[in-house]
Length: 326
Image 1 (cartoon, rainbow, N blue to C red):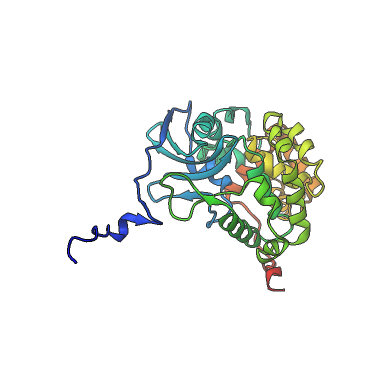
Image 2: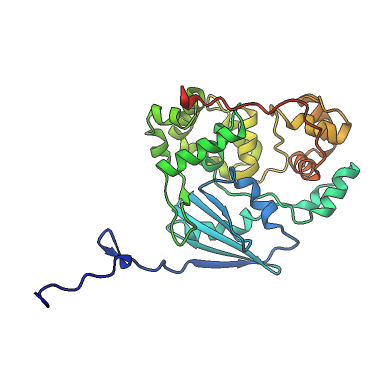
């Protein structure tokens, strides 16, 4: 029988009948910021928990992001070397991601516009000179996880985001680290069955808000070209999206320095304690304390959080509800 059949190719070289190919080299862009820039501080708010399938930080300091851009899915790897930032991108959205790279890394942000009036913020700003506010230019990718975070523990919200993106998203293009995914398209979000939301621990109110948002996804994405205040107004036209959710969204999509988060369970007490010694401050008191930073209130709140001056916890952490077990 020798010679009658062609030798079988090694199993490692075949997957689904198609020979494996090395990933195509990515497109590259190098950008030099005009001042200090801390990659972790800038891009950190874009990560939704340590298991976020769309975000990965590697031991070498590089940051990977998988995004659904107007041109299609794309993967971006950003590394810092000396005073340079190097972006490498793959997929249909590669060019769009590289075009947006400086904006995403805070090129349009002006840290010098912030004038500290409290010693705590002056010291923190001095110790964190690389803080800039990222601007992704993508509304839906910040809006949906923000809706998932409404009135639940961060653990529940991060788990829901992770489960839904991994199940209904698509693999990130290029040589992305294992199990990275691009979030689902608006149409895919709209087609997720009700029981899948339930299994992910998402109640009907949050699921319905996301469904209403993705039905007008194109109109919401147009808000990326508006000023932050107008963008928030447009987002809040969707039932279920209030000031808390819209602020959390434009902080990332627009890099909005004044979009302070109101309606948060913890932030007023943290800001009140740091700037006024009042751990029981409400939204009104928080806004009064932040009034000297009008135009930069979100940056001031970020610096408060980075200062580490937070009130001591006096109550147990709220337990997850776990509605998926019902």
